[in-house]
Image (tube, rainbow, N blue to C red):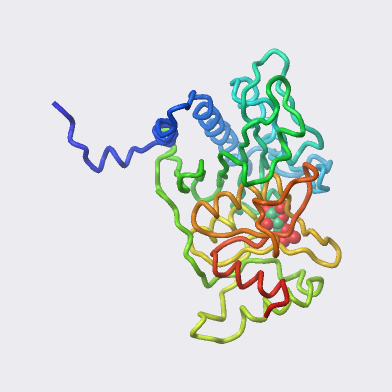
Length: 341
Ligand code: P6P
């Protein structure tokens, strides 16, 4: 007898089952990659547990020191960073890690085996919003190592985004979501806390080809180039045929702003300016993983001129401008930035 394949079964497409079934599509899969993603989902739940009680227990506020990017490190930042590292350091999936919170590479402890993957992550993006209970999140990028064996090196880490084998983010908001891609579509899972499982809620996310929302910190307008200023003015002009004016939405949490852009369409921009020619966002653990996700959903991501995923990294914490979202909107932005409009 076979049980009928009812809708109920598909409703319980857990993240774990999705990962395992995805691995079956790769005959040479060893299960190492599945194990890596599963460990990451566990780390996400551990961070979520602390984030949900942050307002009750005294882990809000700052730790009175700054990270390599000069951002004030809040206690949840540190907790998330350590939690992800400790959840990932012993599984034998990784040869090295790197994170926003650490200047140098994060090496696998000597008593644990090395694996063939590299994990680069932003443990808690948008942390400036923690005290205001605004959506924040973790962002991750996975590469296959380049060196043959042993301790991972900077060569293993500083790979262009087009070589990622997986990327994604975890959203800590009104609900907890795990969004990832391994190059075969973008899929979103929402935590059902009653069973402690991530259940498939957004299968094969496709970003609209063009949107009607723009997302950027216009407080920086006067520092932007004339080309960028013209692009913003264009978005605000009345033109029913092209769907303008666009609506402005800006949360100030990159992972939340990009997630909304992924689902609704439009464009998120963090351009360079007179003070910071490369803008604020970091290539390795913000722009690359988000560009991988958005491109796998049919969108685009560039630094205004060049595809984000084609940029050869020079250093671990380097910044690049970011224009990410619907393909048509990113193309229009590039035309303005290039002075063609
Ligand atoms: P601004 C958070 O620190 C962050 O890196 C992103 O999450 C967010 O989008 C950006 O900075 C906000 O920067 O300059 O607009 O405050």
